[in-house]
Image 1 (tube, helix red, strand yellow):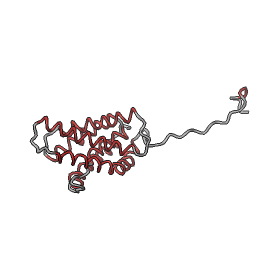
Image 2 (tube, rainbow, N blue to C red; image 1 turned 135 degrees about the vertical axis):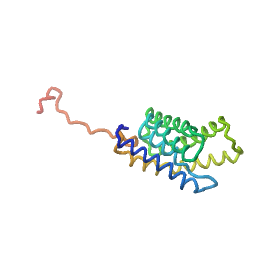
Image 3 (cartoon, helix red, strand yellow; image 1 turned 60 degrees about the vertical axis):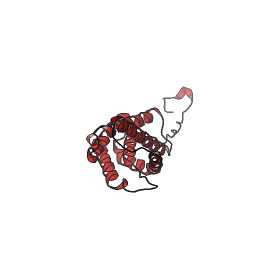
Image 4 (cartoon, rainbow, N blue to C red; image 1 turned 45 degrees about the horizontal axis):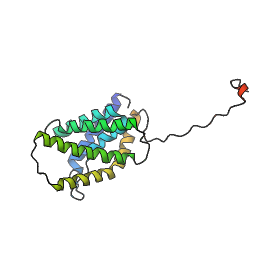
Amino acid sequence: MIATPGAFLRVGAILLLAVVLQISGFGQMRVLGSSANLIPLAVAGVAFFGGSIPGAASGFAAGLLLDLALGHTAGTSSLVLTAVGYGAGRYREVRDPAHGLAPMAFGLVATAGYLLALGGVTFMLGVEASVSLLVLRDVLVTVLLNGLVALPVFWILGRALRGALVSDPLARGRRQRTREAGPIGLRGLEV
């Protein structure tokens, strides 16, 4: 990602919109007893298109904004989302995500990692919560819902971040056209 003020504003607007939509809208829409979570998708999307460092920074910013907006223990979501953003961005830098369904896999893994790590961090911090097998059902349904929602979310994020990207990770590499060459002895003479 090209570090310009416009890129910072785009990523900031994306994260603010994701947090506001999650708190006000998507958190209340229940499907099979659970709801989709846009925040790990937004962080994974920025990491997918920008890389590991923008992914980690956006994860920290989104987590801190989420914790402050909801009044949770400051730092729990930002710690987990920083790791999710860095991991998704690093995987994208090492592997070629040119497949059309790569955003779905990124969304599934990012959401599962976020929910499981957030559960572990809140448990270690001693936040009291009831734990039962229904929690695992909610996690599974949320991961599956985010897998379905990931394709349109990543498409929108790709469109929003297109001007700040060095290269599009979903662009398919095309073979260049072969050059016509003359006889070996006459190259460079333009005959």
